[in-house]
Amino acid sequence: MRVLDREAVAQALPWDGLIEALRQVFATGCEAPLRHRHAAGGNTLLLMPAWDSRCTGVKIVHVAPGNATHGLPAVHAEYLLSDAATGAPIALLDGGELTDRRTAATSVLAASHLSRPEARVLLLLGSGKVARALAECYAARFPLSEIRIWSRRSDNAGKLARELSAHGLPARAVATPDPRGADIVSAATLATEPLIRGAELDPGTHLDLVGAFRPDMREADGAALARARLVVDTRAGSMAEAGDIVQALREGAFTEAHVAGELAQLCRGEVAGRTASDQVTAFKSVGWAGEDLAAAKLAVGLTQGLKA
Image 1 (cartoon, rainbow, N blue to C red):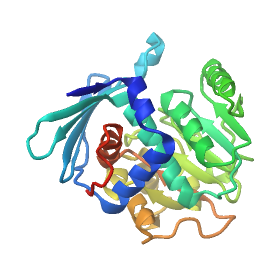
Image 2 (cartoon, one colour):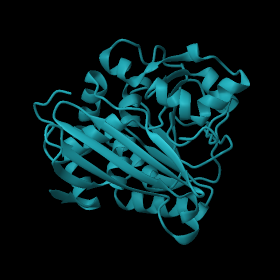
Image 3 (tube, rainbow, N blue to C red):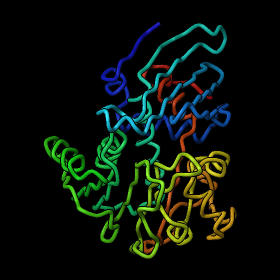
Image 4 (tube, rainbow, N blue to C red):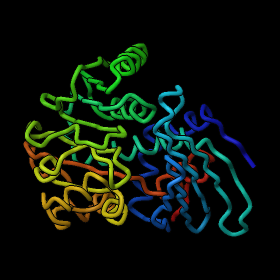
């Protein structure tokens, strides 16, 4: 059995190749039940299985929001990839890097359908590992001239901005999460109260909501999503777990019919993405186990020529 640490996973998942692998799995599909979520004290334990004709995989994730006070990552994860026919393990991969990169690549895959292609200003809310991956992946696909970074802890925003700048990205820290003037607003936080308000979004803005993976979490208010052409990674996951959507539905900001479609439908051409340059668009993800399976297969070289 191969073991791929964080560095090996990062090297095995270049942005272009990963985005294409994700496009294929969303277009063709695989078996991926709704993830199991369990409260573990004050933390969350997630189990995410998926399989196709060649491989099975499962990710085990521990989310501990309080880790920031100890200087530790909020998320720890491992991924086990196995042979579907025999059950024999193929590889054990660092699940944190796998998650960070597939999450960012899924957002950018959606943005390729929903954002204006000439988008130049990215506002990034959050300063953790997912935020870093989002900045790198968006910069690889869009002609960004400015990356604004906001975090509740301004020192963390400044640190990430300096690190990205050192790698040639046009990043700077900002004092507020004000979305005005941004072409793309990408939020990867653990917020439980809205950071983004619909009244503040400029026409043509694309909103990418990555956090709020529990019903009690929230990054955008109902007005922001009500204004937008809204696409989700999966309906089942978003209606059950996406706090931005669950709370907006409960408040009556819109109905389930407001959701234009799933990312798979965009990838198959069954649903249109952006339909006007001044249209506000939004993508809400909570994570789909098929993304992990596709990324793990790519990392170990099993994607070429395979069909789900």
